[in-house]
Length: 389
Length: 131
Image (cartoon, rainbow over all chains, first blue to last red; front, side):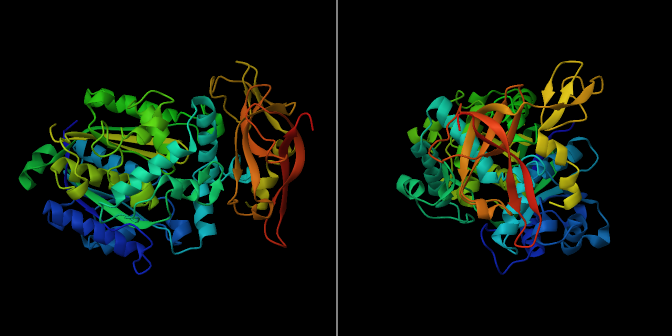
């Protein structure tokens, strides 16, 4: 396999973007990635698009062709492929792009992700998201996504003594990081009290424990390491790309508080990169709910199982802490346009590793990790990026 | 969910019929055609569970799923059946009573309904053993 690098990144603002359509969002992100890489459109060999539920959110399927067309690439007839793994669709699109280049099949590809979630009512959005769990054996019993993660949280609190305030500390940290990200949906500070006094969604998770419904798109230009050097002096290398599957239903996991697909993907990624969790300088993890970040940092090996609750509270995962987590604001504050999220995590990696992350820049960022989860853990995607190969 | 899709699973949902693998002895609910341990070497047969178990974890859902809004707030739980498998269902009891480790038994109850004139779903929920 060939070494692979990211040579350009682009991202729209995330939020309730009433005046922008799905196709406008994707083109905006794609064009900014191409401009950032300074690559001519004719040099692009293929497109990979992460999207969870265009069919439910905008009643549009066949998104690969739509995006190639509206990116002005239809006349070049390059392949364009939509990739779906619920909330991990973006991470999967990124991985497909990396595999295509690493294999030698293509030299330069774009991997992007986009979701337009606010063109339908909240009930439809919630129901579309519930399709990431098992419709026949979870959904039919009244399971909602916050409900599933709430059951993880309840058991984590029971087993490890994790508190409401520790959950809230994750949201407070990520909102603080969001204040330094001009693309973030929420750029306001909140307090522990804001979270623990907010409306209950699924006990013990309150509305401020949940990531929002968002519109947005993100894209990266991926090239082989040889080709990358022709375009940039600061290629960001892909040191590992790993994907793992787990049971689609939460109830079938051996341990409800461990996403074993995350553990498997992380182990493969560390092995591939010849690194350990201690070597990672910072991470973007899948904090669809505050409890999800707590489980993620445990499952990725940054802290011991059961000690994730203390991490945000003690400042371990803050910018300036030992292992900064979600400097972009994460899904919680930056927003979670489902298909875009996994690619946005890679955009944040590149900005941080190039030293272009502005006020939220992490000092000495050399190696970073992204972690993207589909559903309650049926899919997990882990990537490791570095300034060096 | 469409009528045939629900109808196809009626006996499983109403009577808690899952799968037993005669090869490795695994008990599986929800039902599966393929034993996750033995895969294609497994020998799976339908199996009716006793319907007793305990609450492994739970939540009280305040923003209900589509078709369940009339029942909101409700207790959603993962139940560990005495034979081993775990499933997602609801527990019917006073909200202050629910706790991890609570012994429960299956009960036939209304699950949800599709608007005023739509289909009403019935299925297996759980009630406290002592109740």
